[in-house]
Amino acid sequence: MAAQLIAAAATALKREVGDRSKFRDSIRSSANQIQAPRGQMRFDRYQQVIHSVYVMKVERQGNRLVNTIIDKIPDVSQEDTWKWWKK
Image (tube, rainbow, N blue to C red; front, side):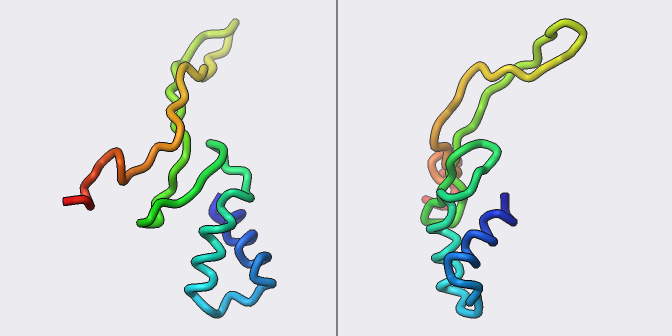
């Protein structure tokens, strides 16, 4: 996921990645263009990833154990979950 994000940001800047602030902004704006394992992602104001979290359980299907999604919690943010930097 990180490599996809860096490649998308570098491509958007036409490989001119010398300016750190422009590259950082390009990474933020490129987040919605990549295929992350958990689906769509974006960044909060502290550059923490906001994405969906899946609640799973292991079930036996025949002779195999498989993960089954039992719930999806959309747009989970560390800022809202932990609130440690709002003190």
